[in-house]
Image (cartoon, rainbow, N blue to C red):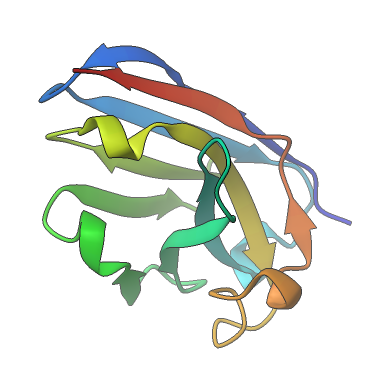
Length: 124
């Protein structure tokens, strides 16, 4: 069982930065691929970024490439999402996810564990 708790959301002006953190419980954190999804008001949930268990590979959706960076610290059981050059369209609830299969974490039905989410609001 893995429990995920996100933090770091808030209100920021366009062009600003935020860093989201996700603290995971459980001794097997390092064996899971980790990711971030987001859901904007009135829109479907979408994957944003993913990282392998070792941190050796990452993947991003096109709209955030070059602006967002996912990373992890297995010693601290924590995954991060550094978000720079934020835009109003990045406004959403951001969810931390974990999956035993990196190939599946990009898809909602491939996620094994979800956090409760943290709200990011980007004002124009």
